[in-house]
Length: 261
Image 1 (cartoon, helix red, strand yellow):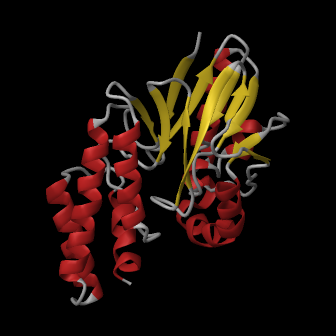
Image 2: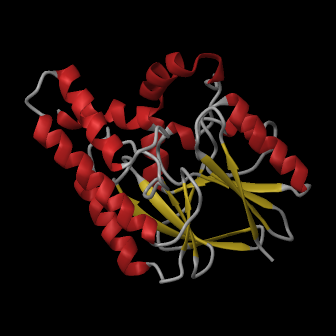
Image 3: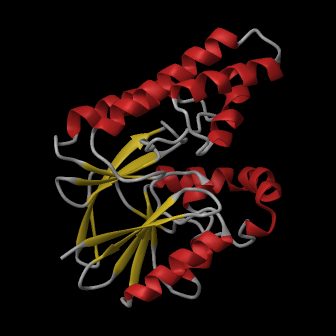
């Protein structure tokens, strides 16, 4: 029998998932900060079964930076598609320069990267659990992937957020919208989405995410020729009207200038 545990970060509301089977535990995504990663490590200890592997769904540091803290001296493989691994290896130095000063002591000084490639279109079997590997390409990040453990249960990374603001600074809005269309075509009606941010939910989250991306792109286009600070304030105001929450608002605000460029 398989059970999925969600651990939500406190420093940043990002999810790590622990997939528990009779044979052990598989970690899906690895937090951003030291203290949130320690919470995941404690949750693994509380389950009381061996950690068999880790999986990284996409190339953003809030999903891999805490892996070294979580894994400690456990010699377990870190699985990802070749595209996700390559993007992490390529961009980590830039992320270190940007995110490190923001997070200060919470930023993991030691970070480990995926070291076990999984081919898209194959099934990774670990701890007795089948993870169907699906490559998406650039969408929310420069490289995104999905993992399906049953017809109903899908780990979608940050392709879908649940009632939180989103990061769009990588500039792949059209590809992201195409990926969301693909999800709506391919996921079953009763699908359960294990999202990267927020509570897991049903297919309605896909349509909500599509509209969020569309509204953001429309707002940036409408305010593109305004002075930078005025443009940023206007887009933030538009997006808060669309989604009246402060959860991950800073990610959306950080996205305005790069997206406008």
